[in-house]
Length: 87
Image 1 (cartoon, rainbow, N blue to C red):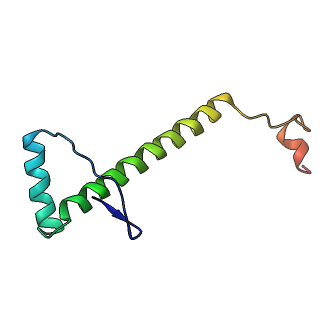
Image 2: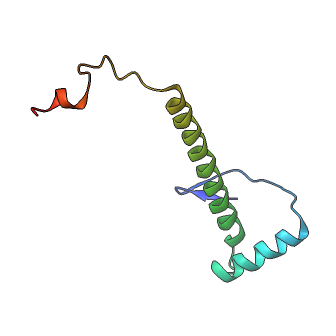
Image 3: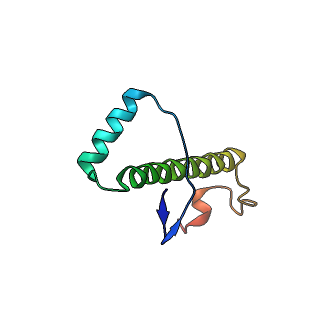
């Protein structure tokens, strides 16, 4: 179970490669501790980070698409730079 804002969230049963599980458990024990809820807290943090990365990736893709479409800057009101300045 993963706790957010004082409320309980869903329970997930997942399968992962034994090697990554061992590395993950070792890292959690080193960084967070071996106490109750340590694994759930670490998994929750990893999931939040992954979701944020995906959201940022989507925002980046939309921004690039807009840039590729281009923007209309309106009609040019001058022919060259000298017309903008008294020279």
